[in-house]
Image (cartoon, rainbow, N blue to C red; front, top):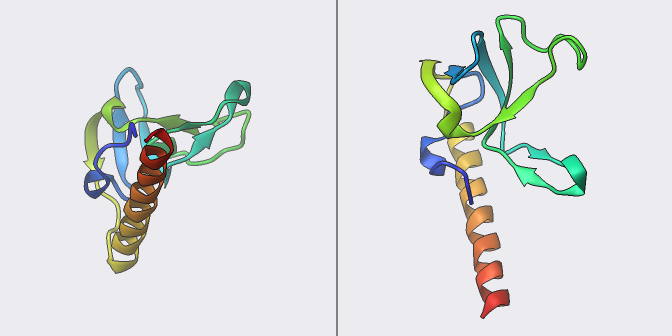
Amino acid sequence: MTMKELDEILPIGSVVRLRGVESKTIIVGILPVSTEDEEEEIHDYIGVMYPIGFAGMEDAPPYMFMHEDIEEIVFRGYENVEQKKMIQTLQELLDSVGQSIQEENA
């Protein structure tokens, strides 16, 4: 899995600066899946330009990126029990998938 350790994942609403991108980005989702060329690829985050937000697919489409693309964390989003439960659920899902892959390869 290319995902940064799940306990270090930034919450939705976090504002970051990405390497090579002038504008700030606000994270609007985690673990998005792109399906370019009929291959699925999991990214760490999906974001939109800050402060514009989502302005349509043609004008300012969302874009997917990895944790290592982040140059600076400008603002950390809201974290609470619900967000922590979601991270725990994702970790359990990833562990389950990893175990299934190991069993298939054994």
